[in-house]
Amino acid sequence: MIKRSIKHDLRSVDALAMSIILPVMLLVLFTTIFGGAINTGTEYINYVVPGVFMVCLSFGTAGTAVSVCDDNMKGIIDRFRSMPINSSSVLTGHVVASMIRNTFAMIVVSLLAIALGFRPTADFADWLGVFGILWLLMLALTWAAAAFGLFVKNIEAAGSFMFTTMLFPYLSSSFVLISTLPDWLEGFAREQPINHAVEAIRALLLNGTVGDHAWITAIWCLGITAVMYAIARMLFQRQTA
Image: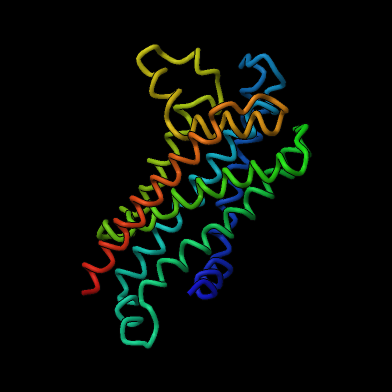
């Protein structure tokens, strides 16, 4: 199932390209146009790269909701049920393929950011920490996307998953200082998981203080993964019973 999902991704060159082009456009837009007007107390490109990672991840995982919904609508999952395989492995295939696709997109965005002037001070262990946090987030969001793809009734609705997940990076310190947000929004923005992930990644990349952000992010991600995995399994079993 993993190989099948990867083959689908490779055949959908336009979808794969868009999952990279959008975060690349955002990176260029924020660093060349908006960055000069935003004061974060540091080089803006160094500040904004973790936020671009979040947008890249949100956009990339949304494709899973569409793929799962498409399989469900076309009856492909029912066909797998007639074969001597674990039919639920189709969900695992989508999740693993999404993580591979998103990891590739993250690497491309990282290299482009460095070409544009991003200068991280992270060593090898710090980069492992960065990708560890990103993989935990990918896992949580991808299982959420799989559950959403099983819940909705058409592909257009599945595509709306992207708009929900892309909202959270903007409600955090991804692009501006949290202190510049309205008071009524600041508390939510400070405590939501994407903000903790951004702060932890920024600290790892720029030799800052990670503090509690890493383990809080891990707890959020593991909790979301457990809940969304259970919901996806329940929906899958109910629809294929």
